[in-house]
Length: 420
Image 1 (tube, helix red, strand yellow):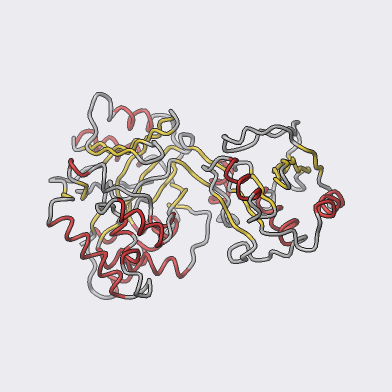
Image 2: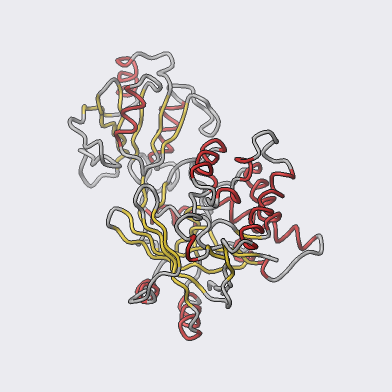
């Protein structure tokens, strides 16, 4: 069962709700965060990316994390952010490209992560873990949301959605890209009890985005327990729960700097020899996020699209073993057979020849980077089915790096859970 916890959030004051929320800390570099802060001094990036304002210090210096706490405390003291007077939960609504996403913000227990009632499909990196662990501990707050999925038996999403009917949002902001983000407070005890009862029948949840934030919250709880600083709220962390069939998932594109020892004809020949079918795709809608495959039929197929020297190609071949959940992923076979097997890119996390672009960027962005000469070619991936992600998590499997791009992308600073 999934146990939900109410909490009294810290949120932007009504008059600051447009300015304070920001993109998550891990989608911008320190330099990009600094530029955002210069344009908007109220940006929550001052808390989530304190290194942006301290460029002369090492990014993991104690003073950097202390700065985050000082800025957060200052926002509270100055009335920029305020604590809600009573515990509750929050409905998170995002509207992007005319599509509505609705989830429930609450807290869950760190023990649910440890006993795998919260399931995951990615490994965490120690350096990223340690950074967020120190940040959460210093600020004494979960400053970012962990994006969880649940399998809806049918009545949860309609009930969550009903809680915003006719009500005005308690916080609202629109990003530069035109995405509307809103939160609605839920404080009625009957409604909260109904939510708790509905989720008590859900056996497990799944991390879609925020693996490092979740693990770091668990680390903080363990650290505070061992040091005698534990509190009830430190044993919980903030999440937003979306029904698994009510989110959007994109592929994660690859960009490669060179063809290694190959010419274009040589690479095409090598792919043919390895059993791939390659054919020019024709006209592509470059304003879109993915390419509709030409390959059809009932047989499971690997399908991806290469952009080389101004032309899109569809590259496909049958899936060798559809029962191999991870080995049958397009990203797995691309990495093993093409990037490593042909081009020698063995480390998908660290090789400087390989770069990634999230699936929410249009295909024209890939074309521009290749046409500029910065990259030799790009690979646009088909999205993984959400059900496949859940099945891999159920099997305790680990997906390759940069396999999924879930939407909506949640903002930081709309809702904060403190752990003191």
